[in-house]
Image (cartoon, rainbow, N blue to C red; front, side, top):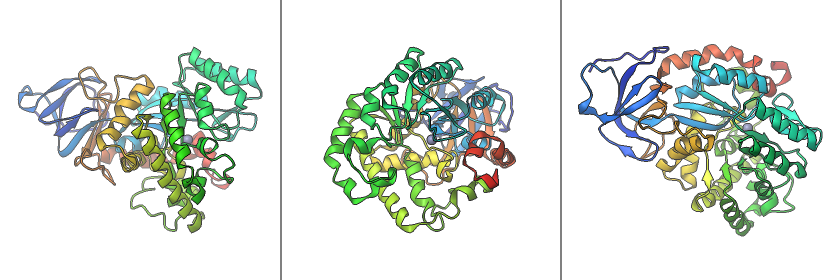
Length: 440
Ligand SMILES: [Zn+2]
């Protein structure tokens, strides 16, 4: 077996990957090498049977897992190398300027970025919440036209937002389905069950549950879940969870975002590595001046409540996917997806189930069945993760090497790329959206 020195931009060829164990998306395999040919996995063979002379990429002390998929992010160029550095090889952008994100999606094969999937702009009512990332719709005809035009541009799904008239949801969902696209949605105001019955396939953040379980709840957003009155809705939560599972609704709770909401309001932002590698201008704009211990306590209770409700969904077998909502909350790309997995494990998933949600299940929702698994014919998207995430998800994961479409990237190189890309921040729509005016 020859030694292969990993390096960026190495042309795809045939080589084998060897680690202490392989998690193929469903189960752990021992003593198996993964043979990569071009951009795909050629197969798995016993390590002892590898042909002599075949180059080998070896990472002792590591577990080989399918590249992870972040199902909720707002992409900026500086995020790309960081996602890869944490083993995330696919990202679904959930709201961005249409032409810009489609250009980035076309560009990923030549960049140190994950694969990019895109929902295009956030489709919203006349009062669009996000100036740069949304498309405002004036009336029902315009809203349906917005779905058709966004679909015709070639997006990977449609995202609906909170200021849409309730009566527009079903026709918009039907228009998306007619183009073969799934519909993902926030559901503040109308409630989750209303949107699911109107044809929405996936809900984000659990942000529409209050109308379903606590009519007349005090004003506020997700933090209302942290008020004492929310615990008294437990019986209604059970009914809502039953109904969400029965309707086949997919839920991407973005618990890492809920988690960031108490951390960002706590003095000192208590997490050892969060915010590391995030461009300092962006970090400052998200974190500075927001410490508020009372709000932090409410948000911390809200996170616990969201985890309890997610536990109900897991118990009922509802489809729960993994998304971080990077860069909201100042979350670090990639690292925050591992946090999401940890929070889902606390909510009731086994580590293998959480990893399966971030790989196999996410790929299935995207309709990309060649992703998210380690098997002959699948895409060669692989991450070498130090330790054994099946017995304990890492708090601060180390991914010394990652492979995307057969191409190998080293951690050190990716961190250098991420630093160089930080200067692009202000030119990207999501950067301009979230940086305060004086910073842009
Ligand atoms: Zn988002």
